[in-house]
Length: 203
Length: 194
Image (cartoon, rainbow over all chains, first blue to last red; front, side, top):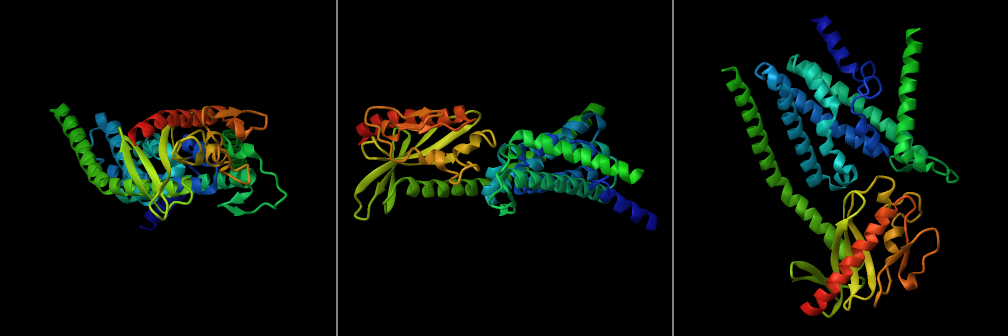
């Protein structure tokens, strides 16, 4: 029993660092690069993915024994697309401002390979509880990474974090950080830093 | 019999998905519509200065929003200008005097241009006034000429010039084009439709 509990915790925390979808597995990079021009956009995208991934993993792991393996990919995609559309419509109806800021990137969660990857690699082979914990860990890792990435870019590109002024008045914003090149630069440095920390810990 | 199972699973999955989404849509659509209406209404009061209320007049499928002052007198008119930008549909609300020769105000209703470049048409984080681009259109008189845009030089508003955004020339040009075309089309329509 206690052994099971420990590994459940591990199931959860692996998504935060060891198998972090963005920094370690380099999955879901399109939304990562595209929407993280501010901390709030990164956070909102992360939360949208959290909802989609957890719901999809729940459904897929419940029905994992009756989904024939020949049609598993189309079935996964339909389930994922359904939850993405639910997210999209709900945001547009209840939070139009967020919906406007994230624009076309919400519908594009359908093709986020991290979500399909978790269904294929995990939810279709594991019981419900474990799949949900895996999904929560993975999407929290994704959310944290996107928020940090967005915060760094927003801080250097606009002098603010979550629209709060951080940098002194005299700070000239580096425009490039909130433009696409800033996403590549920051993400590259973050992945490098993650690898460096891992190498240090191992040594 | 194996293939029957494949067909059944996929059919049932898509059926449930479609049914669920259409239910959700019937709940969400009115709210999305209501929000759009609210945004439009706010925009109308913004582009038509000094009006008390407005009424909608439809001429050949084009909606004109006529601004009325406190005595119910028609003082100005607004309409939508819609067209393609660099990578998205741009919708602008244009407020003008009743002869459609002077722009009173413009409001960008919708755009999804390149983040950080084209999006500057409504939100430019590098300027103190993030809406500077659209505000340039205010007060331009267009009796018998179009709006034009300039780059790198100072624009002359009295001859209908505005400044294009550096790095977003196509988006800037599109907005100018969309507004020009809509004014030309609606000027005739509104004059004849009165």
